Amino acid sequence: MLAVRATPLAAREHGLAAYPFDRDLFPGHLLVYDGQEHVRIDRPAGVIRLDVVSGSLRAGPVTLTFEIAYDDRLAIQLSALRDFEMAISRDGAGSPGPERLPGLLAALQAVDAHAAGARLRTIADLLLGEGDWPGDGEYRKSRVRRILAVGEQLLRAGPLPILAMR
Picture: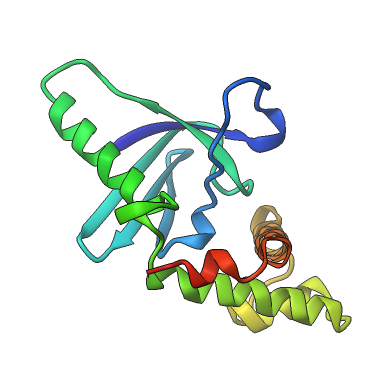
């Protein structure tokens, strides 16, 4: 388990380069319990759990700040942090693998549908299945907007990042 603080990309101070994280690109689940978000990221080698102590991962791409406690859990937390980094890194052995392709394909489908004139609600029904619109706290609407943003980033980047996946 990793404790994290989530900061929207726009709110991040300039200076250090921030790595964006969008949970919608990774297989797993988000649970909100007692007002705190808990995220499970499913990996072939196991599960990574993030407990969000500040901010929200539902708000779209964010930067993460990890809280590592210097106590008897230190080795476990550092190991989990290394696993997380390998799961999301874009180079070497941590290159995002085929498990990310369905999310990236959905993002491209969303861009195509939007370019063809489909409304956000129609795209949500296509990608997420039928559901209330816009959803509790406009969850479905926000998620479709994030998916569209990822698709637009993919279009700008061209095919190389996807083709480079192992």
